[in-house]
Length: 317
Ligand code: NAP
Ligand code: 8YV
View: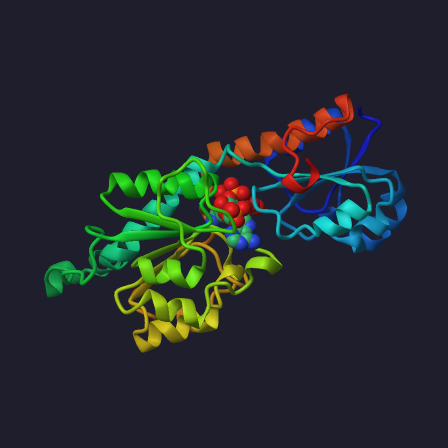
């Protein structure tokens, strides 16, 4: 397969680079002095694209007209224009399942950090204030007795639900469809879900359909004891509306792993006291990221050896 040319637009993990180098001829766009010249020189030869969280649309595909597959790193693929890939008859794969439990762990940790202000309490200790000023204040919020409303009860949403139940929380959810395999109450609209819970867990995918789904109306419905936790995609929440809701006391607090314009986080958000912020680390352990990377490699190898992908995105099945 070393005769097969693969484009790598952005750096990938060593586990991916080493295996792709051994199996294919890899062209690293990010190392090119003039990426456009590299594309003009090798674009026609490219048969596969290994992509780490960067855009793929007709613009790139027109420069790689013989590409057959985009193997994307990550389960979310809102950065990939699937219509353009379908039109160009290009297979798209993602990395589901191998990160589900890790991301659910992070979501639960973020929930507890947010409700109990654990990050702020640690900052208090590290600043010497425990010794100089006394104990950190008692938190107004507690995890006990809460109802978690999950927006996007898919693989990760269900893994979060199991954890939250173990912490004594009630669960309800919203998505486009009622799930056949769970008994949790279903709410047909996101506003209804927000009104029925006090901890809104956002784990729906990004993209045009969900953009700003969590808006001022939803936050109003969540109410003054409410927390929003976002482990899904930044685009799903109207960040300006969220900041306003936090400033006005429309909701109580938030825990965010993802943002609208990563890695940029609005100053206003950083200045708010009842907000816990993480730098998109949901899946970010070495073991889980390596498992995701292995799926990128396995998809490319399987495609060129058998003509079948291991984990095609739902639109390509
Ligand atoms: P999944 O199994 O496909 O679940 C997605 C859920 O969202 C499904 O229950 C689906 O239910 C619902 N959904 C999909 N499209 C929707 C829409 N347009 N409107 C409303 N609901 C919709 O995916 P997953 O593996 O759980 O991953 C979920 C998302 O988590 C990813 O797409 C990614 O954005 C995010 N993620 C973040 C991190 C991180 O590091 N923070 C890590 C991994 C994943 P219906 O089909 O019934 O609507
Ligand atoms: C990764 C993610 O951080 O899988 C996803 O959808 O958001 C995360 O696991 C991301 O893909 C990094 O490239």
